[in-house]
Amino acid sequence: MSRKQIWQIVGLLVVIGIIVALFVWFVDLAAVGRVLQTAVPTYLLLASLLLVLGLLFYAWRWRLLLGNKPTLLQTFHASNIGHAGNIIVPARAGEAMRIVVLGRGGAVSYTEATSSFVVERLFEQLMRLLALVTAVAVGAGITLSPGSILGGVAVLVAAFAGIQWLVRRRERVLARWPSALAKLPRITEAGARRTLTDLLDNLTAVSEPKQLARVMGTSLLAWGCFWGFFYVTLLALGQGFPPEERLAVSLGALALSPPSAPTQPGIFHASVVVPLAAVGFDEVALTAYAVLLHILEMVWMIGLAMWGLVQSGLSVGAMLQREEATDLQ
Image (cartoon, rainbow, N blue to C red; front, top):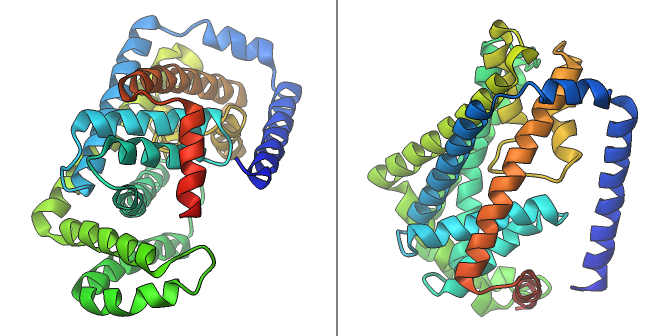
């Protein structure tokens, strides 16, 4: 890694340390511990199953975005390594890790994997907006003005309209854009052309009605399982939340910090607890809920990532070196 990357990681670790320290200072850990002791093991097993199923559908969608070139097991392993990387390494290094793992497998190029990630983010934001709007509708207490909702929808509509525009003007884009992008530092015209070609191939495939329906279907299945994971984990806490709050809390927590965008301890808890506690939900119960959610995510994502590393024959150091080498190309 470069010196700049090292200092970025150090800085983020300091921020995480401050968040954890504040968390310990302000939270009644004894009360949180008492709530966690009530967790029902049967519900935790069911929640774990739903989480793994969600990760499987998430990997299936990525495979669809790549034109079914890699196997489902390849995208599953790469996704899980990326999720674990995001939990362990600051600066969301896991996103680059999963691209490296998949590109190294040989089924797709690094540029194909990268371009599919760009498209995937659009569908993730769509699912996140849907979860947030649903949470508001069922009474999560999160305030969203009509302008905020319309603004989010407008951004997504503009993004999908941009996809159609790029697909229809493919030849013009490939003729003009590479030379313009080559004027930027560390970008060559050949590299820009290769990346744009892969991106346009992915966009063309996704823009077809049947493929779009498949991608949307797997997105809904993945997020449906993720919501089931959040809801059943909440049920595992027994009396932590009254029945009338459970749907709103689980949907609100899902929208704020979904399993498809895992983060480090402290950041995850703050993302879930602070907004929901601010609108009136019990802070102690929310903290116990966030702790339990994150423990399950870490256990399964890191465990599945270790399996993926064994299957791929990669080490974390090799991935980081490959990431840096790819950036310099």
